[in-house]
Image (cartoon, rainbow, N blue to C red; front, top):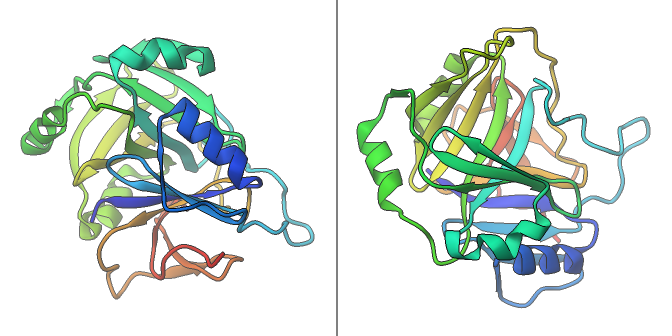
Length: 259
């Protein structure tokens, strides 16, 4: 049950379309409207829509997620650019840094969704799914950027794996960060051509409730049937979604919000 669609709560659909098509070479699916647009990201789609009509009284107006913290919640999704086109995108990037086996950089979309661009294949410290790692490498370099993963900081990686396994995800491997004083490690759960990247820390983490009613990343929709015993959460837009034990929303039961 791979990730099929990424929901972006957009405050200006045309602005989102311009950003994703120009900066990340996404392609429009059908005709956009002022309320909604669907973008093809090779391995998944992204639905950008004006589903946020303003928070309820007393609710925050911006996401509580912050870069560099261990707050539970989504950290964005990742397209992977081709090497030949990286110079064309570099003016958009905010950081360019080496990582285990790959090069990465980060930027934000117009509504504050954190995006990570990745070049190359990860070299896992511990390989837990050799077949999945081989399939990942076989994807090769795309002709244009493709969707790769969503990421989440968790309180309990084992609980996240137990939640994801019935949805069709299994571990590819892990990367430990022995020099990080927070006891930081990363696990990678794969289904089809998409991945849930799981961040874990030994230090105390800050809890965070799902925030599907704010601009930016909303949740990721899975292809296939959701398990009957799953407990849904209803968003302000009236869509039922699933939240894992760490509060990260990444599966829909009834599809994206109505425009």
